[in-house]
Amino acid sequence: MKIAVFLPELLRHLFKKPATVDYPFKKLEVPKDFRGTPYLNPEMCIACRACERDCPAEAIEISSVNEAEKRFRMVIHNDRCIHCAQCVDSCPTTPKAMQMDSLFEIACDDRHKLKTDWVYVRAVLKPKAAAPAAAPQAAEPKT
Ligand code: SF4
Ligand code: SF4
Image: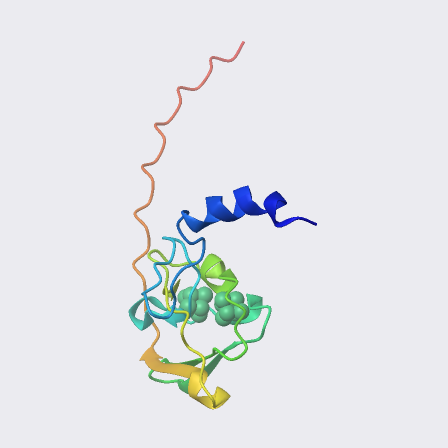
């Protein structure tokens, strides 16, 4: 095949911007809803264990540390986490006790270093204000 066949394409690409990013020499911006690493906001956690139950990778472990004090421990095993954000979806609190950050450079040479844990007292969330009662309806006249 003659080189002339490729020449127009070659010249076109010589003057185009690179399609790739110069990572890791340049910081990589991640999209707004990027699913990085899960983390706990312990002040909001009611220890309902929905995140632990629904995690498909069994990456969340919640245990009771002190029953009387309602103190719990949560461990997230980031070496198992598949960054699906199911734990965030399952978390019932508002704002969410479980959240995802935008970190992705967490690789290391020892998987045990990827564990993150929190010891905290279970949050007691205020109940939502009850909706106003409906006005009583006038009784219909009997016929
Ligand atoms: S992001 Fe997915 S895999 Fe990771 S801890 Fe949450 S539910 Fe589990
Ligand atoms: S992080 Fe959310 S889902 Fe998990 S135990 Fe706490 S309140 Fe429940």
